[in-house]
Amino acid sequence: MSRDARWNRLLELLAERGRLEVEETAAALDVSPATIRRDLDRLARQRMLLRTRGGAAALGVSYELPLRYKRGRQAEEKQRIGRAVAGEIAAGEVVGLTGGTTVTEVARALSLRPDITGAPDAGDKGRPPALTVVTNALNIANELAVRPQIKIVVTGGVARSQSYELTGPLAGGVLDEIALDTAVLGVNAIDGRGAHVHHEGEASINRLLAERARRVIVAADSSKTGRRAFARVCGLPQVDVLVTDAGLGEEARTGFRDAGVRVVAV
Image 1 (cartoon, one colour):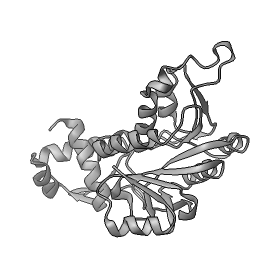
Image 2 (cartoon, rainbow, N blue to C red):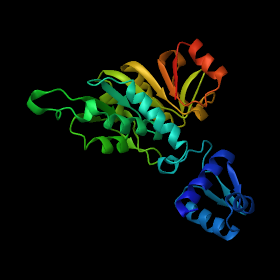
Image 3 (cartoon, helix red, strand yellow):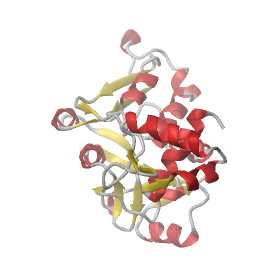
Image 4 (cartoon, helix red, strand yellow):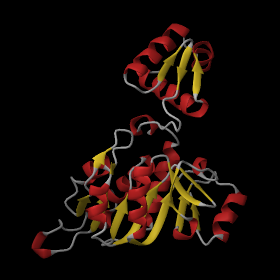
């Protein structure tokens, strides 16, 4: 196992358990305790965890992995979800994209659609863009900015290192002045009360995106269903479509459908 893969797994275990012990973790990852001690020391220096006697603890009450350490989790499911969400969006729409690994896959799938990438460059001879994307996610804006057929609108705000998302009143000022056809929300959890994320600042911006859109799509793998996170983005009645993976249980699927949410499981 490479160092990056090992660190990714260490942080996943920490997110699940809240605390790690060196000996137990070494056995789980099939490496020496000395290796785990070095890894924990290095991650502590990066302020990714709190080093404790004999192990490590998560920093903060609600532990959230930075985006760069989430990329490998449910990767295939997220790619399928991304393609399915992209298929829900028509060329020419104005689309709001939040941050997160799953919505990043949506952006990548949109950027590969022939009817979008094969269109004339936005602005050529007054032509409208093949797609307009409004996002508060710096990584998504960076990936799509090289596509001249796609018009990119980035909100203002203060960047969060955990998710590369811009939050705060500057972002809200832009969103108050626009209208969206579709908002695609990446969430940390979705249940009968609605869609949730860990950070209240992200929830506020995501809520504005949902309010400015005619249609709201939540893109979330099945591990996030039936759960809650700290800050609610919107109630379930505001969600039009949930795109998830085939791991969604029948009871949960029925519950979402009964609430008026169209469920797409891929």
